[in-house]
Image (cartoon, rainbow, N blue to C red; front, side, top):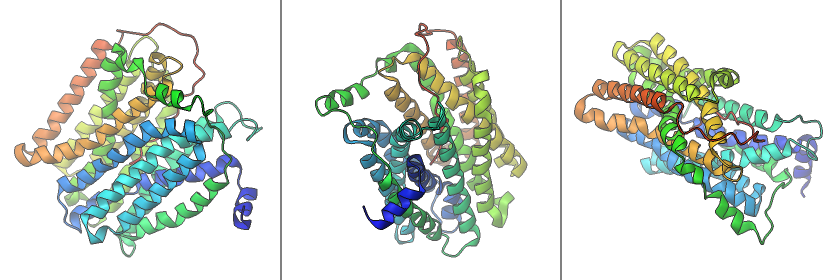
Length: 423
């Protein structure tokens, strides 16, 4: 080990090294969201193109989310997490080359999504393992999950905040935010190199472990299909509208400070989501889908307020809409994961959780669908139709609320990870 690496090891506890890697990936995933307005106004990309770039991110994230966890069981956590940090660095390198063509932006978003998917699937598991004996003798039960929640929220918020402010007031707005991310990610990569490996499946069972990770009878459970599946896309679909799409439609109200508002919208929604999560368990019910009903109802109200704010060009309504959307995201994540936990058998919890998040991230395509349809039928017809569809989802959840409840299996020793939406 080099002298530099030894120095890093002496200053960092093992979990801190992984924390740095996850922080770099989540920063990279969320730094693009406040810049959508810049690409429309300064680079003159159409709304469809800009929101398409938002959706491309999901094409990298979902496969990484579903595959990386199983691969890390066979090949170890470190190798996959290093790949995730390298992916987020590659993403920012390509995004920094965005002035040379749209293809660089598309490829950059794809790699950024891969980095976040790996951080969610591998980083959280590694963080949990390093937050217990023998790696952290003083850690209490649940410390790993709490540390993961903090790093996802912090990385997401910092990425949006720094990128938005640099694009608003800094030089080279299409390049500098990504160079800053690269500069902080390289030390994070070095830190991950120092973290100890914690898990590797025995060679003779590795393949069977991988296969088990992708078999989940719970995916065909009626409770999953009629409750979790129909609710989950609204979680990040609401996020995509609230602090991705909405700021691009308030140009008359925000004027020269559009990027500042876009940044503020991201931070408001993320902060609200974090604040409501400790209370979400109280809203969730073991006997109904109350938690997801409340979550989608809040998201419906938030999207309705966002639509009204566009029509009235009202910043106040836009802020309130992001508060409602953030509340819906926070409640929906916790309640959705608790629903998954009671549906899943002990051997399929990981893959069902991955399926839940994958469905949730599909919602990031919603702004692209809105932009495409608005060309033909009008923006407000599309937006109010989305609100109506969300309201119908609430009714569907209410109809299935107490149906197809799985039998009580006894306590499952798995905590709900309170990750933030990152994109």
